[in-house]
Amino acid sequence: MTNQPPSLRYNDIIEQLAATLIERKSADPQESYVAALYAKGLNKILEKVGEESVEFIIAAKDFATSDTGDDAARQALTGEAADLLFHLCVALTDQGIDFAEVAQVLQQRVGISGHAEKAQR
Image 1 (cartoon, rainbow, N blue to C red):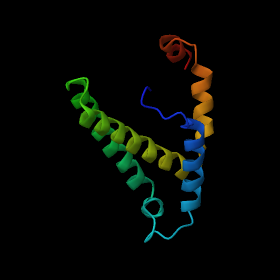
Image 2: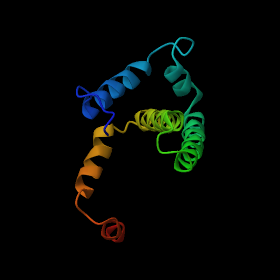
Image 3: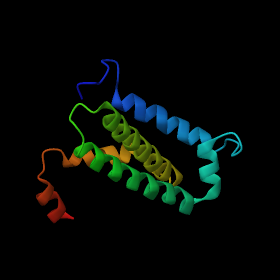
Image 4: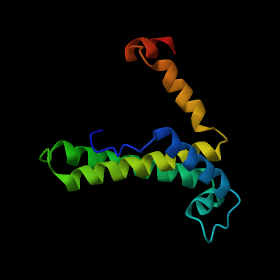
């Protein structure tokens, strides 16, 4: 968090991304990566979520075993995290789920022990 620019607002970024992903549903798949994913269907989108998950895991393991000041490992991890979140948002948008719904669930879980929350499900 120490590398966060003061003007960075998570909600603003997610709202911009959500608007772009909705807009791209009607874009030309030849001109938009996201439109091409939508055109290929849910299986392709989920394949990308899985691929990015694996890449994130590898980057996290590499970061954990790197020197604490290793900027390349940090950049790789944050880049893969961004890729994973992006593709997760594409999957949610494809299914008609607004990220605000996910944020609401996260908000409800704030201050609740993970063990207690899991037991409630």
